[in-house]
Length: 339
Image (cartoon, rainbow, N blue to C red; front, side, top):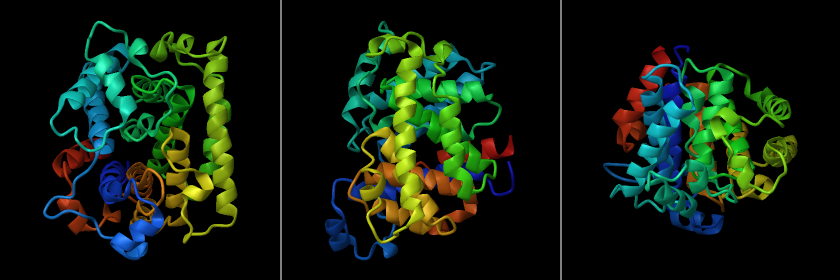
């Protein structure tokens, strides 16, 4: 890692985007503009605390599970799945789980709570909601993981709740995007690199991490199962590439790449907001928060990308001082930046 402190910047960006998009999530753009004024001037809500949603809550759950799993040696499926299940159930039972959580996450975590049920049986196999990748950022930031570990763990954390192959692929692709940016990849080439990654992994089913999850789907082989997810991701990346050929910053990004309620659209629309304002991270968050779709998830991911690219100093200090869970976010970021 460099002095940019990309892990710190990415985690803070995730939480700040989440908080900025929290009050606008279920509104259309005219209603947002009417309530908050010009989108380029939107301010972080909440005094003295800017509250986050389930997006950041669950991202922190993934970070804690990752810390536990890696603390016991080489990260593998069992070492990650057990603490991840515990963290997700703790989130499910928490009195702070009152931030409009997604129904798929609630259903799956309720089933995981029994303990005797395999996670594959708890997974909601037909759901590819953005809960699969809104929380995956820590997998793109944690040092010391091989490419196979990072991809397998990203798909596993998605699969515990969202078993659809597109949820798995989009989570893997989101973590990979964060990793590329944290390592210094140029944003101008990012979409091409993500397309290449998707093609390379199109038929790679991480059986060690996913077990027989594919059998709950509707395909005849694990390769056909996972390829369906990568193909949908490639489709939305094509839409993103088209939107970037004639960028329109004043237009609702959801009109180009989707409303973000599902995983591949959350990734693409967040990337669009980031790439429209590569050197203006706060504007990227504001554009993402002023959208007609899942504004908090889109802004959270846009913030994760922008922070990974620009580092911790990308964000206004006054915003950082007010963000909920600030100390825990900074703690994870500092540890990963120093590793």
